[in-house]
Amino acid sequence: MLLQIPVGPMKNFSYLVGDGTSGSAALIDPGYDVARVLSEAERKGLTVDYVICTHSHSDHCSGLKEVRRSTRARVIAHASAPIYKDIPVVDGSKLSVGNLEALIIHTPGHTKDSICILMGNALFTGDTLFVGECGRTDITGGDPSAMYDSLFQKILNLDDKIEVYPGHDYGAMPHSTIGFERENNYTLKPRSREEFLDFMSEP
Ligand SMILES: [Fe+2]
Image (cartoon, rainbow, N blue to C red):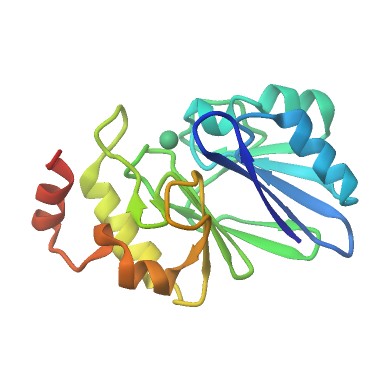
């Protein structure tokens, strides 16, 4: 079961991903409206066992305290993230959410601690990749060269059928696929590293 929930004033998405059999679920990016997201989980019979932050920007994790107060969820974030975490993860880390397996893909570029989470056929991309866009790399912790590797060596190595669930609703539609982004996302056009760095430095 996958719920994409629009939250807050900046077009953020929180996600609930649950195993329908056991009811075990992960909440991804608790930025805003935590009470509403948790009541949605309850309504669907899901127990939030994990809360995962795709990166340490506050619009993706400022609700952590509230989640920890209201649930027994364990907090997962990249090992380098300067936020509370119970389970620090790195590239290739795996965890089980009921019968679902989550694979962590470290995708620095927007921030050093950015991760994408692959669960079944769904990839949660945080602020690394949006529908039709990629995350900005010109703010603290941003690194366009690292973003190049994350996008071109990791994300684009994934199967075209995998669905992309971004951290913000910035595109023409709320979610997409790797294949659609490969074809249509102007930031993913084939470029050398130098060309990509030039491209990302343009206003
Ligand atoms: Fe961000």
